[in-house]
Length: 282
Ligand SMILES: [Zn+2]
Image 1 (cartoon, helix red, strand yellow):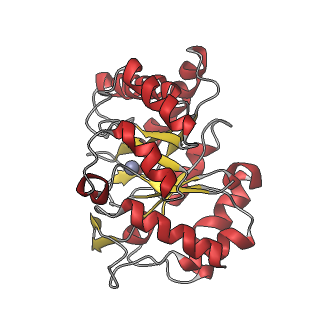
Image 2: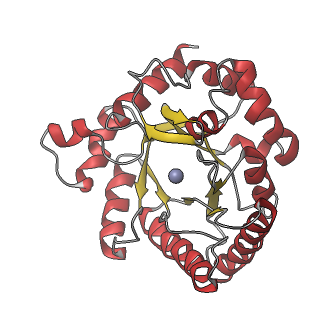
């Protein structure tokens, strides 16, 4: 089933006087949203106890929680220790994601640094492949790890690279951040045909329907410059895009059922509700 929700609590959640993420599931269910992405951006700083508590409340309100692993992950790092830590960050994220009751962990796979693209990407491939088998050995064979398409030139994560990573194992599914793709490709996503040609068709051809059907999606409008992503915007923006409706048309036509998280700057809940409205109006 296709699901919509925010990444992180939106400003309106706090403006309405809510303070604790434990209150989030009820708040989201009142808005007819279905998922929430918990970001461990600066580290996995949630205890198993707290995560289990949140997971139980979320279950009560039918909210599924996905996790975003720390931004420090870099499988193409120059130091071996940082590559090993990248695995540890994913393992720690899986542990908490399981307490949340979910089975998806999104991550940024690497950065080119002072290496050729080929060398950097091969390191990422090797690191991610080793990691998936180590996670399975640890008992996380039920977890999907989702490498994300990135918005800046120096980051690993073009559509093609994410496809290659997802070929490594059935438990690796794509996280397509359409705002990132649009930023990196200088506004390439405008029409339904663009969404198909640039992202959906290559993914379907290379990865097959079952995997792409359940892909993970981040969607927000993003300001960009010559080197890609500058900052996340809200749906108020009319300059940078991308627009959601042409994508929704393609998702319906292709019968895809991704989890779609809004990463708008402050209006994540409102903008995910808007995406759900658009999708259901088609
Ligand atoms: Zn991300």
